[in-house]
Length: 283
Image (tube, rainbow, N blue to C red; front, side, top):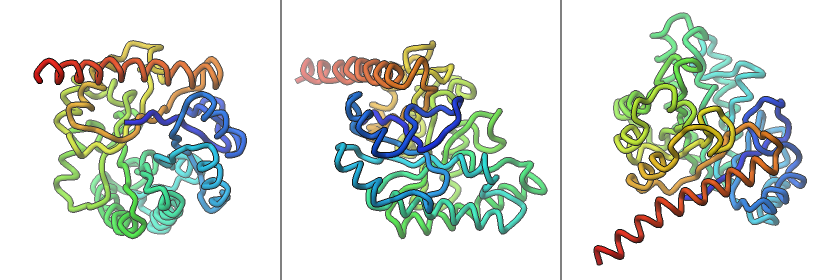
């Protein structure tokens, strides 16, 4: 398990991204703040310099764990459930470009806001049918580029479809996707899951990516979420992926980054250290 911070070339002041700026500016800061992994949020992968991205990742000893894609919905309203086939095709093409960026690193490509909403289609039934068809197309592309797609389970204020982890598991089990798994977020879980630990344990290996923030979307430890419970559940399902920070960069970037890392490292040591002590006792 690794803690990944988040970065973006450009993002609004209220976007839950820790670092903002060019690769050569923010990656050294991430490394100096103690990070070894990063999730980049990218609006259009065709407009970035992939060679520079890969070079700066290597220079700063950072692993690209994942790519966030939601800005394409916010800016262009691209989504995979839309009534308009051209919009669905453009959304899939946009996600494919992110897969090309992710491919050398075998990173996960997040499908969050680009799922769309029921209102993007003529009916809920049409929306679901469009999503199913689009996901099969994305699954084929993900296999080609040797990446995973992380279908994000979002709360019912931000999503009309699959807003509990159990809903996501049922949907995945009803389909034959090979490279699509579930992506969960502690803020969304705090709204729609009655028992976070139980929901995580029930989902098991379907979970392949985790966004971490406290209940108020600030750095972990700022609010009231029980990260011990969350980490214990992730330990129980042998989760080995990233804990990617999707937090507001309050009070400022460096404090947010360092407080997040230090708190999560402490909690991981508590949970996994306890596990080591149990094994030693049993042996």
